[in-house]
Image (cartoon, rainbow, N blue to C red; front, side, top):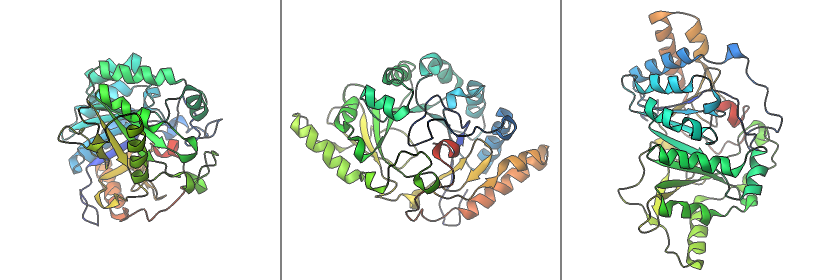
Length: 337
C-alpha cells in the first residue's frame, strides 16, 4: 500500500481493548475511562478478518496493543490466527508485562514474534505513583518471563519525563548483561488538550533525545563506564523509528525514539486500528474511519471489499507530518499505545 505521499504502509497496530490492569497517570484517569460497550468492541473473528484483508493489501507486520492486550479474552487464539495469515511476517505485542509469567510460553508457541514491555521507572515507589496500582516486581517478572520464553528481541519502552527525574543510566545498563533492548521515548502529550490524564505534564516535560543521550553518556563517564556508540549489525529487528546505540561489548542496545524533536513522519509506515474498530491514519490526528461499520454492514466478499475501501480512504487522509500537534480527543488507552 502507498499513501498519497508515496510512503509504503505495511504495518498495522491493533488495539484489542481499552481496559487495563494499570491506571498510568499519562494514559487514563485514576478511575479509568468509561469502558466501551461489549457490542462496540471488535470481535476476535472480526479482527482476524481485518488482518486478512490488510495482509492482502500489503500489510506485513502487526502489533497488538491496548489498553493492556493480555487482559483480552481469546488473545492467544488471535495471535495464532494472525501469525498464520498469509502475508503476515511478524506479530508483536506491547504489554505492561504483568501477565507474561503465566502467558509468555503459550504466546511464543502461538506465533508471537516479539514483545515490547512498557516500564517507565526502576524505582518501586515511583512505579506505584505512575501506574497507581502496579508493583515494579510484577513488570520485572514479566521481563524475565519474556527472556525465558525465548522472545527475541525483548524491548523495554521507557517514556522519559523531565519532572520524574528517572535514573536513565540504570535503564541503559539493563542492556549490558542481557539481550534487552531499552528504548527511551520522548513524552508525547496525547489526550484532550493534552490533559485527559490529569497528570499536569506538558511540553516542558519533553526531554529531547539528543539531550537524553548526553545525559546517559555523562552519567556513564561518572561511573567509569564507556559512552554509548552507534549499534552495529546486531541492532534489534523491528519496524519502528528508533536510533540504536550500545555500550561496547553489551548484549543489548539502547534506542532513542524522537517523535517530537526529530520527526520521522517522512518514514511512517503504519495505520492504527482502535478497539472499537476505527482506523486512524496518524496518532496525532483525530480523523477516524469506520472499519466496524464496514464489517457489520455486509458479509463475505462484500464485507472484505468494504474494509478495503475504508483502508483506501484512510490511506488517502494520512498526513505528511503531525506538525507538532499537541492533544487529541481520545487518550492513549482509547487509541492504542
